[in-house]
Each structure stands twice: as structure tokens, then as C-alpha cells.
Image 1 (cartoon, each protein chain N blue to C red):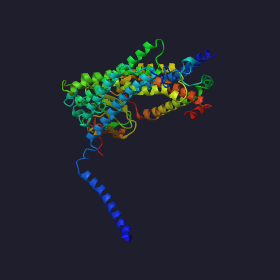
Image 2: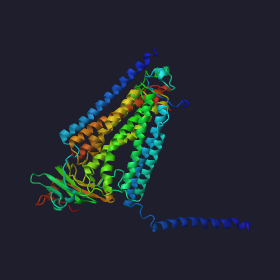
Image 3: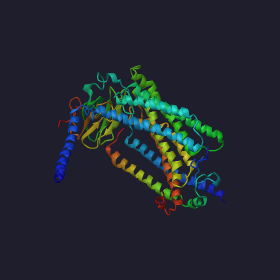
Image 4: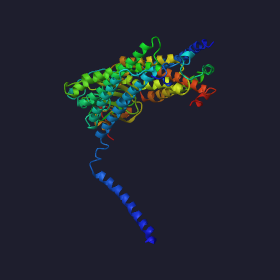
Length: 322
Length: 185
Length: 71
């Protein structure tokens, strides 16, 4: 037996290798003939995916992360426990319920309207109600940020609010204002139309109300990154923020100049005229100022860190950074 | 001395920030001036003609009735192209425009929000039901251009596009009614 | 709540006097360094913004304007 062992195994290995290849091909052949793959690449699947992708990226990822980040800042920057933690958890579960509602309608193909949901395109009303619940959860977060700051101020009269919390509260106030646009659009136009309670919609008004939200929402996403730049990066690099005053000014400028410029998303729209559009362009130019100021302030903060670590010369501090 | 240093630091810091801010201000002013200058001298601005129209009866009569769509040359020589954007086609699917002359494009939609852009040009506008979207331009180069719908309007959105034929002066010949159709190729 | 060294109740800037500071930066070293800051930052940030402006102008003048008027 021994002298044919290798001979037998050689033949068997080839046989089973062929079997593996044939099985893979057989599986693929079944897939091609089955209805399972029929939907892939169709417009209905594609735009369902685009809607799910947009909602997950623009509403769920952002809002949940920023809420969590805000709770972190409120506790660490203020060195005190979060007031109203039960409310915070309640808001979390309310927002989760909203996400589930929206996701179910999207995955069943009843809400392929993208994350912008411009009417007269209409989805299932439960898609919109799901989004409303997420926004309401975030409004509870806003209130908690204000309450936390107020409680710290009462315990620390006369002292400036720590910059990270100052900026977080500015962000929360900005969010409260900017969500009014989309909330009014949903509650008074889109959801009643989706339920069939109204038969016509002023499309220009709906687009304008949504645009109210459109600019400051991206600063809602951006400001936590700026908070990290102003309050965490200089320390992590071993240096210090170059100018606390400019930090506060930057966040105030964001709050003031981001609120009115949503309508720069309507520059190509026929429902508004040149005057409105020019004012939007003017204010948009102003809202670029805090970002341009930040470039200098943060670079200078990192230069301090680099030079403290021994960097010399005009650019040597860059290589010396951790 | 260690008490004065922070004040000196603070003043110098704010001084440098002010210097930088001044540079930023100059930049913003220059950009805005450029925008205003091109608006006043070259007429470059966002399409901003606010004109309401009833979307439910567009096709029945008036300016956007089917026989009136496409490119027409008026008695004074002005060129206007009228197009309807609907789920999921443009009517007409092809328009002819002259090269090097001012052209006015007018769009209307009876159903949902659409948008158009013409590749290789600055023509770009939303088409919102209830309004006529109007864009003035001059086509600088001749050739066939693509005009896709660029605002999601439903499941057929990816297949919704039209052709814009930019014809040199010699080839742009209006018929007796002042209409110009696409050249058959 | 026990004092956590990570938690700081105020964000100092480069101008703060010593008794407000809660980070580990040595004041004397900082004073020495502040003689050079922010020259390097000015050059780096200035160069970055200059590149941005240049890119914007190139696209505006070489792509946008040649594509014809729009209004």
C-alpha cells in the first residue's frame, strides 16, 4: 500500500481541486439564473442606496457624533457631571426610534427621495416623521448644553466659560436656529402633503425653507472639528493656543454669519431675484472670515509647540512637531 | 517683570492677529469687487428672472405649448429657446442655438424639481414647478453639447438628458416661422 | 469628584499669566519661543492662502470666463 500512497493522493488532490472550481462556478451560475441579483444596478436599488447613504451620512452620523462629543465637552471642560442625564438618554432613544422609522421606509423603497427630499417628490410620511424625531432628540441636547453652561456659570461667577464649552453652546444655539427651516418645511408642508391632507405645495417656499437649514448645518458638523483644533490640538502637540480671544471671536463670527446664508444654495433658483442672491453672496464672503482667521491662529499655536520641542528657523518647527 | 510679560504677549498677539485679519479683509474685498465688476460690465450674475407660471396647464396653451417649444428667432433678431423639463425627458430633446450671439433659454416643469446644465458652458439653473427659469448666455464654441438633468427627479433621472447643437452662423437658418430645428446628422 | 489631571477648567492662551495656567508649558521657555512666533506660521499660512487664491483665480479666469457669459 505504501508505495502507491503518494500516487493516490496526487490524483485525489487534483480531483478535489477541480471540484472546488466547479462548485464556485455552479454557485455563480445559480445566482445568474435566480431572481436574487435582479435588482442590483437598477435605478430603484441605486436611488434607494443613495437615499440611505445620504441620510446615514448627513443626518445620523453627524447628529449622533456631535451630541456625544457635546456631552464629552460638557463634562471635561466644565469639570462637573452632566445635568439632566436622564433627559439625554431619553433623547438618544427618541432619535434611535426616528432612525429606525426612516431606515425601514427607505429599505422598503418607500422613500427614494434622497436626504434632501425636495417636494413634490414624496416619500412615506413615516420617513419624514423619523427625521423629525432625530431633530427633536438633538433639540434636547441643545437645551442640555445650555443648562450645563448655566450651572457652571453660577458656580464660577466672573470667570470666562472654558473655550470648548463656549464653542459647543454657540454650536447648539446655531443648530436650534438652523433646524427651524427644515422643521417648518416638514411639519407644515411635506408631512401634511405626504398624508394627503393638502393637495398642493408651494415648491419655491419648500426649497427656500430647506435652504434656511442648509448652510449652518454644515457648520454644526464643522464646529466640533474646530473645537478640537482650538482646545485639544495645541495641548496634544505640547504647546498652547495662540490666542483665546480669537478663538471666541471665531465661534461668534460663525454663529452670526452662518445663520443667514443658507440661501446661497438657491443662487441658480428661479424663485429668487438678483438682490437676494447678491446679499447672500456678500454674507457668504463674510462667513469665510472665521475660517481664514483660524488658519493663522492654529498654525501659530502649532509653531509654539514645535519651537518648544526644539524646532529652529522659519520651518524647522514643522518637523519638530510630534 | 513676569507680570508685564503676559500683557506684552497679549498685545503683540492681538497685533499680529489684526495684521492677518487685515490681509483677510483685503482678500474678501478683492473677491467681492471682482464679482461686482463682472456683474456690471459683462452681465455675469446668477440667473434671476422671477416669473411665475401655472405648472398644471403648461402644455395646453401659451408660451410653453408644444408647438412653441424649441428655438425661435424673433423679428428683432433675438434668439429664444423654450424647453419643458418633465419626468423623464426634455421636450424637445434637441435644440439648435447660434454661436457667438446672445441666446435666451427658458425652461418650465409641470411635475417635480429638475435642473439643467450645459456642458462646457456656464449655463446652469434649477427648474422649479411654478416658475419659468431663464438664462441668458452666449455660446463661444460650436459643436454638440450635452444638457443633462442635474437635480434628482425620480427613478428615471439618470436617463434624462438633451442635446444642444451650437451651430456656426452660416448653418443657423430660421425657417419661415422663425424656428430653427436641430440639424439631422 | 477626584481631581482628574486631564480636566482643565480654563483654556489658557499664550498670553496667560502663570497662576491661571493648568498646562505643562514652562513659562520661561514660552517667553523665549514667543520671540520667533508667529513668523513661521505667518509664512506657512500665508503661502497656503496664497496658493488657494491662485487656484481660485486660475479657474475663474481660465475656465469660467472663457465659457461665456451667464445671466
